Image 1 (cartoon, rainbow, N blue to C red):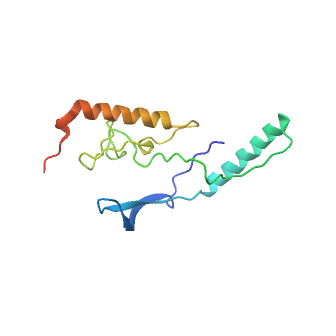
Image 2: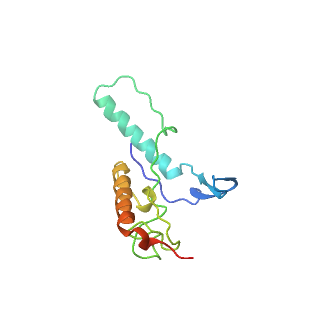
Image 3: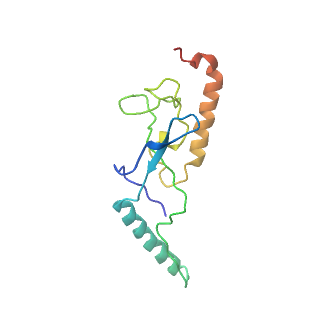
Length: 143
């Protein structure tokens, strides 16, 4: 069953007030909960899946939705694009507003449609690695 979360204010990444990383910087704090629209989509598709399984001859069904221990693909929080007004990183995954900050994960593209985005995430990371190797020292920031 595939669904897509709508952008909702209660889902966000902030800096933790107390937890820090190994360098003493505030650690990220992820707030996420499934919204009403996503719950309705999951329930609708779980019902359709059960209908399909019964039509195929299944006699014993167990539904659990949502499955809390399943994987989630976090996408769309750092959109890739050429315009700094509408995107966070450029085509080389470099942040528009922070020199030499590169973002190499699923957040740079808005959606994965109905398929697993892992291959795209890996391809973007490999493309970034090639770019960094080719660019070498020319990427250094003075200061």
